[in-house]
Amino acid sequence: MSSVKKNYIYNVIYQLLTFASVLLITPYITRTLGAYNTGVYSYTYSAANYFWLFAMLGVNNYGNRSIAQARAMDEGTGGNEQVSRTFFNIYALQLLTAVVSAGAYITYVLAFSVDNREIALLQFLYVVAAVVDINWFFFGMEQFKITVTRNIVIKLLSMLAIFLLVKKQEDLWIYTTIMAGSILLSNLILLPYLRRFVKFVKPTWKEISRHVKPNLILFVPVVAISIYNIMDKLMIGRILGDKKEVSYYDNAEKVMQVPTAFINALGTVMLPKMSGLVQKNDKAKCLEYIEKSMQLALMISFATSFGLAAIADNFAPVFYGAEFIPCAALIMWLSPIGVIKSWANVIRTQYLIPNGKDSIYVVSVILGAVVNLIANLLLIVRIGTIGAVIGTILAEAAVMLYQTIMSRKELEFGKYLKRNIAYGGIGLVMFLVVRLIGSTGEPSVTLLLIQMGAGILIYGGLSAGYLCLTKDPFLNDVRNRLNKILKKKK
Image 1 (cartoon, rainbow, N blue to C red):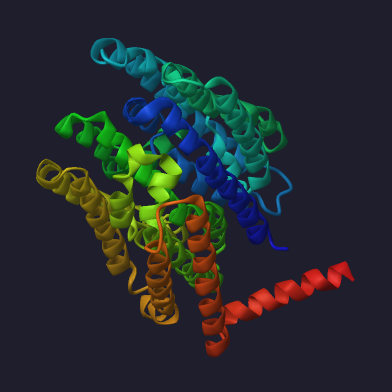
Image 2 (cartoon, rainbow, N blue to C red):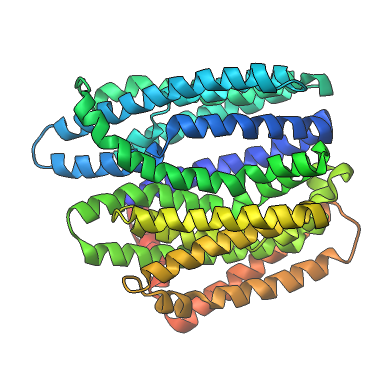
């Protein structure tokens, strides 16, 4: 099995576990802590996340790409000189910004956080986690087994701790400690593995300064994206003054992470792979990977987006409880996000960033942030939380369209659409049937399972028929893989 497939499987396994943990923990937490306390958690986490962003700058993408390129340069030398030098100089910059951000966060909490100071102080663990966050290095080295194994263990332990220790509304501080502390612990566990891949190289100011500008350039989209990923909650809390509305929006948004989770896993795996191919100037292989990735991304995102929209009315009360029925409408409105973000993710992680076209990426997300901010200011006051949802959709659409327009000469978007638009039609058929099934009874676990089963059968069956009818190469890839597995068993 190729390294790409193995790494993708590792990441998909973790995404499945993450999804399973959401299915198990979210209903328990929303019922145990209540809408107000979950809103407090979301609000304080959003604030802490800003300081984490400033601590990391653009290192998650820049460091990933730089390590992949350095690894390509080290190939054939039998050493790791380029990788070691690149890592220690980039990490020195990260260490500096992370320490400054941690100090700034404590100042912010003591000076401005009055109502929820205890919870905000506990979120400091999350900010400190940035000091030892070197996931980007292992992503660049394509060592996903190490990161995924660690994440799975920590995820399982944190889930167990939540069920054992969080028992009442007053346990919000325990929940916050577990969530923030698990991230810090997860990052700390990675540190000993560094010795396998690098030897210490003393950072120099000259080398560190070389990484400042490109790091800051890729920090701009990080900040811009945060405006419509984090600022939404802060603006809902400030403008509407209701922590429950923050909780409704946050929980609906968590559900909508499902359509993009598998595509994010693909992007995480492909960014270092494509960066290495670009370093080797293998354009043909790059285009081949992008075409295959776009098909997989659209196939999955149409299924999950239409599927979640179809079950929203039944899902919200069953999953979150009667108090969270307003989440259903938000999930419905947010459903297009899955397809939009999946398309943009392939362009960003497999073309723009690997090829160093950072300016296109930066401008696109700034455009999205501006669209989101204006839409939120105009709509939240008038139509409440739905206004934030519309703002997010408009922002993501603006990002996707700009990246598509600016990449149209290099990538065959017409071909991608022609080959994959049928999945949208299949998704629509599934949506109509599953929603009709949902209207036959009151919300229940049984009805929800029937809807999900019907959706899988309809989408899977029609998609398989479409692949056979068009003799799609994707089907041949699946057949070849199955044949290899069967031969090994014999």
